[in-house]
Image (cartoon, rainbow, N blue to C red; front, side, top):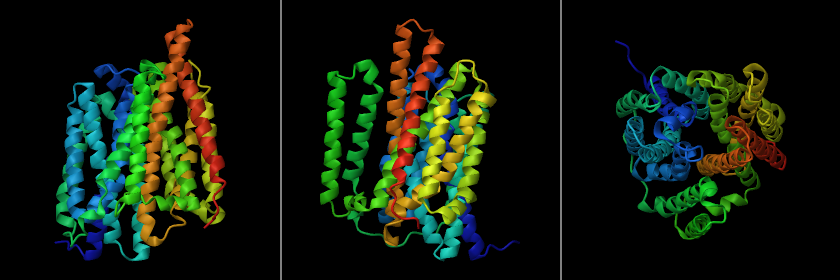
Length: 467
């Protein structure tokens, strides 16, 4: 009988934790190729469809930091298993959803469970691997899973949607989640004594998440309600009030969710703004390019999944090893700026996508540039955020940059999808055919996304350290 040594058990536990994280990463990309099918089946409008993505991203980003703090208080093992259970149950609700409201609410709960799993998985890996070299190897594996998960997600989403239906992109989480839960019960060590109850900031998490959700709702519905309507103005004012409340809470609470003083660190502040700009363009690219390929070019869900595959494979390959070598050779500034510049050029190519687009000539070049840019830029962006902080604050810095990325993606997607819909309506009102007007809206969104990525590239040049 094969005996499992403590060292082997350590790495087996890492594989199980990475499998749980892979399930969370899959859910951020697997949905994109199924969006047109979901829209037709449940009757979503072009603008309300973004809530299928944003409901997940907002709760994920809003509770990412709090999830880590809850793990500190209640125990990493216990909170990880609770988050995993919540995610699996929400996946079941998504899979059997038969209305827009049920799907959106279930997606929001999925995001909450995913935030807890992701935040605590990192803490568990840090607890498991205390020796620096072993920890570096473990984090490399974890990072590769996060980067490569996007490749699997778009392909799996296309396969499941084409072979069965969009419901199965959520139901596939059930066997994975159950297997991870059972294995974690056996492999994860019992939790030790925890910290005091003041270590989590529920008020901060609630106010910042509610503020961003209201802002996104106001932007998404701005076209229908009117940008100067009382509803839009009041929602934006309430969002601003909640943001101010969040800042006040963080200044007064004993253990804040985000200590505001951390933003005085030059590189961390620049990295976070860069993350917001980059995510705003990247998430909109995923969302709108999937719609373009299905609504304009007439691709099937499987064809869309295969179309994304080259970009995601390049992204994963560069994230795993090539990006690290570029950082060692050139520092942080040049790889980050170059990666964002590649992404901006890729989005600019998408901004000229024609009605009768050819994949090889019109779609693939932009896809490759975006995959290359993301693969090069992701690691230096994370390292730039953590470059100036003390080792004891590295987890906080990592959580802040990931939160900025998710929130930037949610707000950027809402803004660009709304502008695309507004421009489409304007063109249609001027007698342009429906599909031409739709394509014109997509082109505008890609062009503005290119400007966001370019702004991030320029801003990254102001980083002060090459370490």
